Amino acid sequence: MPSTDDRAPSSPALDDQRLRRVMQFIDANLHNPIRLKDLADVANLSPFHFARAFRKATGESPHRFVRGCRLEKAKQLLIEGNETLAEVSLICNFSSQSSFTRAFTRAFGAPPGAFRKNGKGRR
Image (cartoon, rainbow, N blue to C red):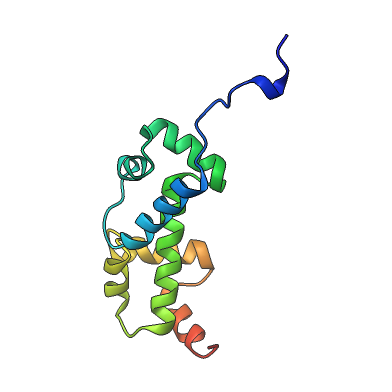
């Protein structure tokens, strides 16, 4: 009877180098559509195995992780930049300003306009 240490992992691990390449790709492409296949290609894994390995490595699905990165980028732009809300939503690749506002409000508890007004005073 094999011990648990002798078993192969159920899915290929997303080692540090692959994860770093994927993170760099996400960061460089937040303004573009990012598909699961694109991320899997960067990691040199099939989309199915990549999704499982990414969730195991980060605790989030690739889609949720990318959305979180886009929202963090939007937060940064709202505090530091002078772009309009529509421009921020386009820069962060949201389909519309209203979908951006909904996602931002859900994530941070305030709409982007109110966040900008309050966030700039806190720097």
